[in-house]
Length: 188
Image 1 (spheres, helix red, strand yellow):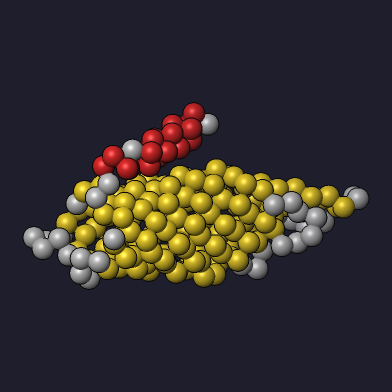
Image 2 (cartoon, one colour; image 1 turned 180 degrees about the horizontal axis):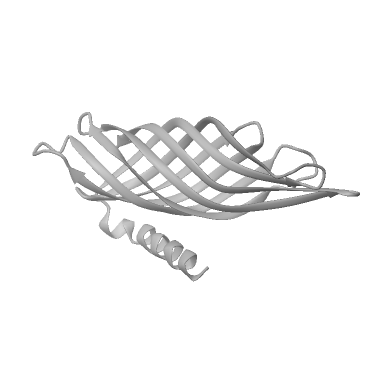
């Protein structure tokens, strides 16, 4: 728990210091593939493991602190057969140029935030949980205003929810989320 608080405090303090160091702001969107691994326990049936796959959508806004560092906030939405999920993330990426022109960059970074999960079956309450993880990918600067990237993000989730209906009880848990996405950003 202390680690989660330290990661979140570090990301918040980085975001709070942006106005003093601001260079290039950006806004963008992404779409991609998301895989969630659920575990279901029920008094009427044995334990089941479900892997749900669907499209995820993201909106993000951030700042390039310099040529090698960026921070950004992301809102994401995903709806699969089991649940609806909204994510609110703060992320930091370290960028490494893959040439003298600085057109292509490799990036790796850390992410922390909150996810709002809602199981679609009746009887289950929606719940907010802390999430954390990381991302990596390739970014291409099309020109001074536009860039695009392809990336992979892993989010560790500790989502557990229970419901009971008389003698029957059931629980869902979501351990992790994996995303592969394509993004386009506009710098201003």
